[in-house]
Figure 1 (cartoon, rainbow, N blue to C red):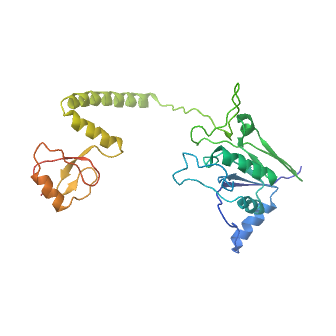
Figure 2: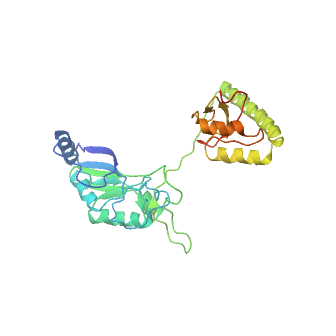
Figure 3: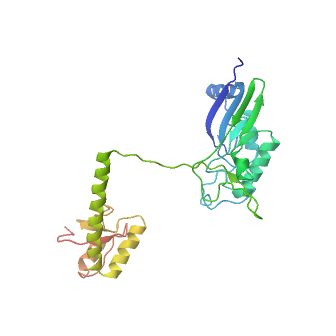
Length: 270
C-alpha cells in the first residue's frame, strides 16, 4: 500500500514578509511541510492587492489583508492546499473574495470553502500528487450575515461567499435539573412581577434614564458607599462629593465615571 503523508496546520494569517527565518526550528518546520505529500492550512487573510472594499463587519480595523505576494511565500513554505471558509474570507467583500480566488487559481493552489455560488463553495477540492490524491471540504460556523454563498434564483445571480456550516444546538437535562430550572423560572417570574409594581410607582423619567444606562452595558444604579460608587467601585473625588452633599434630596445624581444613578444613604460622604 502506498503511504501518503499529510501535514495539517491551523490558521495561516501572514500579512507580509517571509515566515521562514534562520532559526533552526523555523527551517525544520519548513522542511517538514515541504517534505509532506500535501500540506493543508486555513487561509485566514485576503491577499487581494486591495481589490474590493472593507466589509461592514471588518471596517472598524478587523481586516486581515495582504499583498498577493504573500501567497508565493505560503507556497514556498510548502502549503499547496488551502481551506478558505472562515470569518475573514470576506473582509474585503465579494470583490476581494473573487480576486483571492483568481490569484489562487493563477498559482495552481488547490482551495475549497468559497465560490461564486453555494454549490461551488460547498464542492470538495482535489489535489493530486505522486503518491495519491487528497480531497478537502472547508466550511465555517462563524461569519457575518450575508457572507454565506447562495445559489441563483430566477433572474437573480448567485452570490459569491463562503460555505456555511449549519447546526442545531440540543441541550439535554436530567429530571432533577429540569425541576431546578423550573424553580429558577418561577423565581424570575415573581421578581419580574414585583419589578413591574415598583416601576409603576417611580418617576417615568427616572425609569427611562435607568433603562438607557443598562442598555449601554453598565449597571443602571448603585449605592454611594463612602466615597465610592457602588456600581463601578471607583472612588469619587472630594469636589464631586461636595456637590452631591449640596444637592437636593430629589435631585437625580449620577456617577461621574460610569454614569450609574447614585443612590444616597445616610452618611454617604463619610
